[in-house]
Image (cartoon, rainbow, N blue to C red; front, side, top):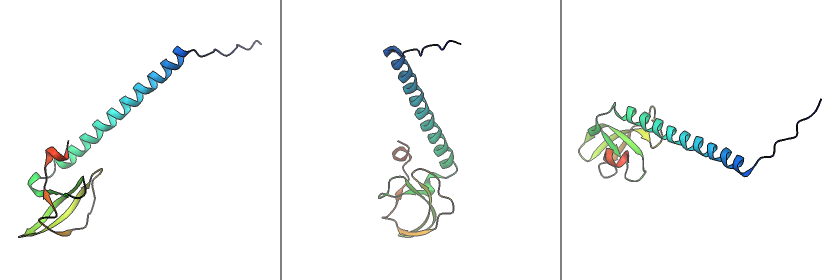
Length: 108
């Protein structure tokens, strides 16, 4: 039984392999970004934007207003910048510590 000699790879073979690999990685990251945006949009569609507040100090932290009493706002965190927060603890904050939810700034 004769053994076939290994086929030497050429520069074109390497370029083709890494080119296809690069295209696959770019398509994967594009799909993940679209999937993340769809998941975030469908999550925030369940809330009235007037009920939501943002933290000016931590980017991406979004609160839902539970109750507002003058200068004191009782809020519950619902989004931490990457995913939904389930059963977040209520917090008592002043109106200065939170700002109104700005969808154009948040979804940019």
